Amino acid sequence: MTSKSVATALTLYRARTLTLEQAATIGGCSAAQLEESARAFAPTSERTPADD
Image 1: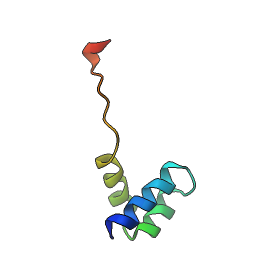
Image 2: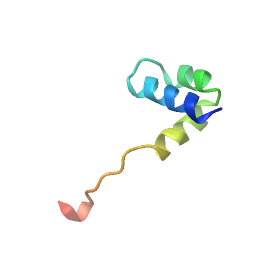
Image 3: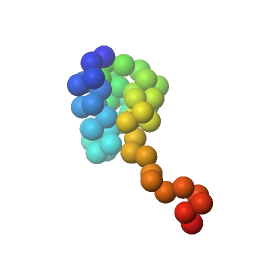
Image 4: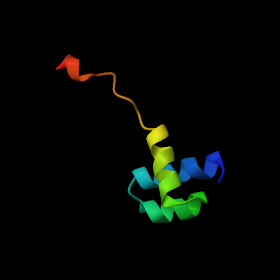
């Protein structure tokens, strides 16, 4: 599993081109590993509940 293959797989998954399982296969990792990577690269919100 290389960072480039995982990034490509995440991009295709987020674009809804592939399912999570298909993206994991392309990325050379398990669906759980890809999901964990997706969380690590997820954009964080600047807003907090106190902002509401």
